[in-house]
Image 1 (spheres, rainbow, N blue to C red):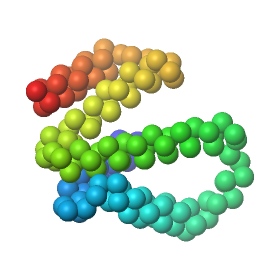
Image 2 (spheres, rainbow, N blue to C red):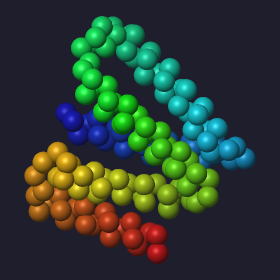
Image 3 (spheres, helix red, strand yellow):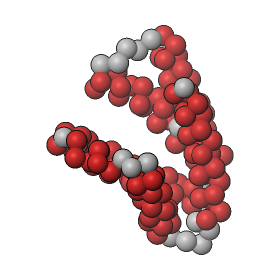
Image 4 (cartoon, rainbow, N blue to C red):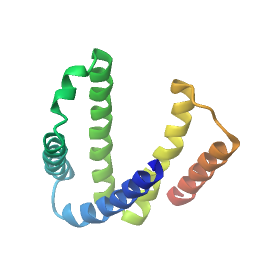
Length: 137
């Protein structure tokens, strides 16, 4: 079932790139990111309220909060740089290079989370890295 959500994530990430490229035309990329973030906040909290998941906030530990905050900061910086890249480059260039994050996530998951690096994962990461280099050059 996880792969269904992953495929939906990929679909919406692709739509994000297309919609963002059109939406940032003549707009400061930081302002565009801020507007997009407000929409995401409303949708995310709407889902939490609709599904009655707010009581779960009391179960968060300090470690949960710290790493969720760090994740939020990383996401925000990712979006800021992504929108700036979209403003300066073509979607067909920026979106694939952005997906280098997949290879980086594999490497970081092995280094910091102790996940197992299989040959399949290693080859996939290397192909992503090679593809990114081809697109940049």
